[in-house]
Image 1 (cartoon, rainbow, N blue to C red):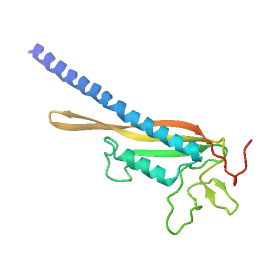
Image 2: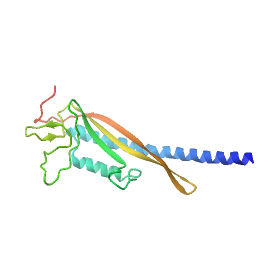
Image 3: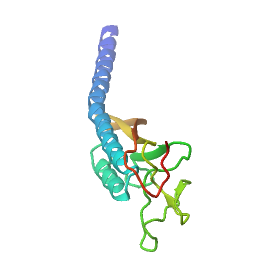
Image 4: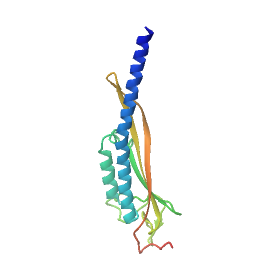
Length: 176
């Protein structure tokens, strides 16, 4: 009787180990998708010194349409998030706000940032300043045991990358 019990326990442990190894195999493309999105956003941020709203919304739509990133239905419980922050003496978002019909294109009020002559806050900085791009997502750890899906924990995963702004803007002072 003890031998049958040990055999059953070994079979259960072996199947759980196999499922965990399979989850690790699925984790690699999940993480590489985050790396590629962060790299693309870093290239865009380096070229313009900020990320335009169109690029940001396209990247989020693309990211959330992929398997394992589209696990949540509500936008509040989003499975992925992209942030772009300036790393300099004046912190602020490097993502342009969505422009409403009532607002002009130079209206930015999300966080404190560099102001132009009219007092409007701009999402961009001068050439040479650094921008940190971070892609965060929640990996859905799930397994099927005896025909029932078990989802014990969604663990947070993030990848960040720092880039340097390349574009020169005439309306900002040059930091030397």
